[in-house]
Each structure stands twice: as structure tokens, then as C-alpha cells.
Image 1 (tube, rainbow, N blue to C red):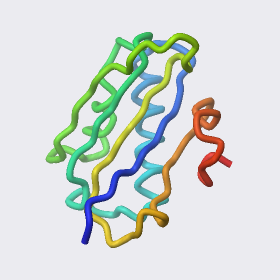
Image 2: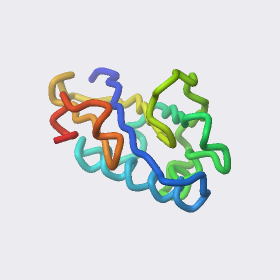
Image 3: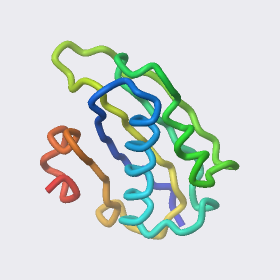
Image 4: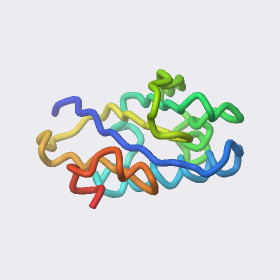
Length: 123
């Protein structure tokens, strides 16, 4: 079994705690579903980032609400690159997996689909 990274991103239309938690929950659940992760013990850790215009809540709260209470979680801010997508939440999961890197499905939802049009999941 190898350690694999799974990326995902989504956006919200406002810096609102409920919207951030809901979008993060939706993204996390979709990553888990598409990569057939059924047990949180498979997850080594998760890093959540937000653009600097999202400051009202830690997105990791959404992971805690779906039961990831023993997974190490970290929140951070993205660097403010001029012209970058606003109000964006990103997740990087580190998981134990038998899947090959080409079998991992990265998930981009909502406006964040524009970030990686080359990814199958963004189509």
C-alpha cells in the first residue's frame, strides 16, 4: 500500500461560515466517494487552504462534522497571487491506497472546475 495525495477545490459566493462548511463538506464527501474511501483510518492527514478573502471559519470544521475526529487536519491561507480565483477552498488528502496515481480521482466542484480543466473530474 502506498501513500497517495488527493486534491480537490471548490468555491463559495461569500465569506459565510455556513456556506464554507457546506461547500467543504460537499467537496470532502465527493472526494471520498469518487476514490472509494470508506474508512477514515485510510486517511493519514488533510490540509485545507482558503483564499485570503475567506476568514469566517476553519474549513476543517466540516471534516470534523462528518466524523474525521481522529484525522490530523490543518488549515492555511493560499498565497494572494494577483488574478487568482477568489473565495476558493482547497483540500489535499494524504491517504493509504492500493490505487495507482493514475487511478486517483481529484475533484473540482463549482467555479473551481476552471482551475483544472485537464482533470477528468472537472469535466
